[in-house]
Image 1: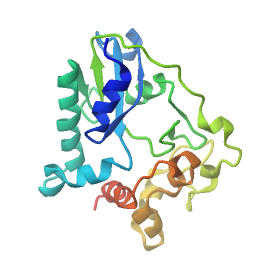
Image 2: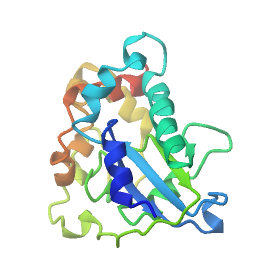
Image 3: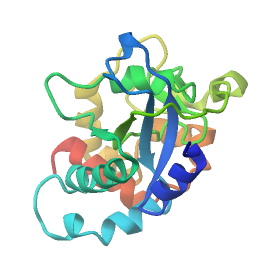
Image 4: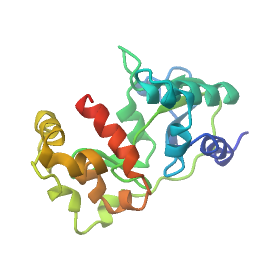
Length: 218
């Protein structure tokens, strides 16, 4: 049986990391898969690898999605599995459910998902559905349980993200697009950056600016 650590090493060699895995049941809508692997950027190594890719340099739309298709698809093929992507649909794969099923991703005080190692910067470029059942480690507890300050709860300058409220996307997008939102636009979401776990990830500001530009449609 292939060890999970060996698959993670292979993913990291191409700029990704296994950000959790689980054994699906019927309610997970994972077909006949015996193990689901969730793949996200291996930061900070991911960004320079992506910047050097053909997809980033060719000037065509959706470079990150196209890069993900190629790289996650290549991993899936080499592992004998099936690649699945969050933006393919409808119907769309239940990535939020899958993320929480790993036991490494949890709800946060501001409604966003938080990961035990990536914090509020967690994102998934794809998943691989494997036909074999891998041995999986026990999951950690949510990092929010030991976060006494909860800086994420008050970090948004326009209150678009906060406890006990839905995400106000229009207010967020309007602020990020404005002159007052330069810090969010150029350095990344202040709420995500406020998370102590996020601060240890090492995400480069250029990567956050890339995502924010896509968010506001630039």
